[in-house]
Amino acid sequence: MSDGRLTGKVALITGAARGIGRACAERFAGEGAFVLVTDIDTEGAAETVRRIGESGARWLELDVRSEADWARAAVEVQRSHRRLDVVVNNAGITGLDLGPQDPEHTTLESWRAVHATNLDGVFLGCRTAIELMKPPGLGGSIVNISSRSGQVGISGAAAYASSKAAVRNHSKSVALYCAERGYAIRCNSIHPGAILTPMWDPLLGEGPAREAAVREFVAEVPLRRMGTPEEVAVMALYLASDESSYVTGAEFVIDGGILAGSVAQPRPE
Ligand SMILES: NC(=O)c1ccc[n+]([C@@H]2O[C@H](COP(=O)([O-])OP(=O)(O)OC[C@H]3O[C@@H](n4cnc5c(N)ncnc54)[C@H](O)[C@@H]3O)[C@@H](O)[C@H]2O)c1
Image (cartoon, rainbow, N blue to C red; front, side):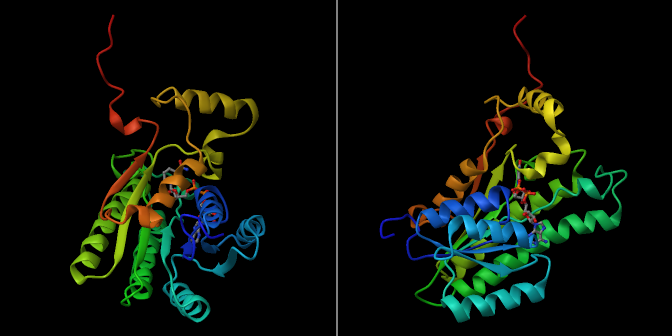
């Protein structure tokens, strides 16, 4: 492809076996990028590569929590591609399967587990990206997937909200650092609201109960629906591409209007 928005670029996406990560991988490849599909779910990642085709993507083993995995990935990217233009730090967990997640009952173990994936993973991803992108003549774009939960408190998912707030802040530190150093590296964060992906399965249940749960949830969303992974991928595409060349240290909300206001407001009689 010669006229894609990412033609000639190499992009690494974490958590690309499903959901938002897979949608980014497919959209980026459709715009001409070569995509390094990474995840701890090897079957899902293989399926993402199969859907894209081996001329546009390959699987790379990478648990975002592991410093050694990131180091190995960096060596492999250098060896095979000699460049890395885009990193999407997307892998994330809610921790809701690890026990209670409210501020009173969260165990230290589960608090740390959530931060290990959501925050340490992003820190390591940014550090690796800087190393690979900083040589003169290269450069790149780092896209960190935070959440609307990084901008407000979430009483029942406190570790998740804390980790996502830290991702929002770290994205700005990375952006400023790279700008100060004269590295041609931009870093921005995306803040999705309720995007219908497998992450929601345990919360929504199945069958008619699922439909009822979605209906109840979207009643609080100004646009009255959940978002799609493809809608988030379009935002990531803009930030990954050179179209956003003057954008760094910024945050992009995609939440159907949830953060625009409060549900507690006076209503006409
Ligand atoms: N879906 C939403 O409503 C929503 C809202 C806000 C933010 N987000 C964020 O978007 C990102 C993607 O969410 P999603 O909804 O697609 O989730 P998902 O659960 O469908 O997919 C997450 C992927 O990350 C992978 N992953 C988990 N731990 C990993 C690790 N240690 N190393 C590598 N991969 C790992 C999983 O295997 C999975 O494939 C997450 O960071 C999430 O917090 C999602």
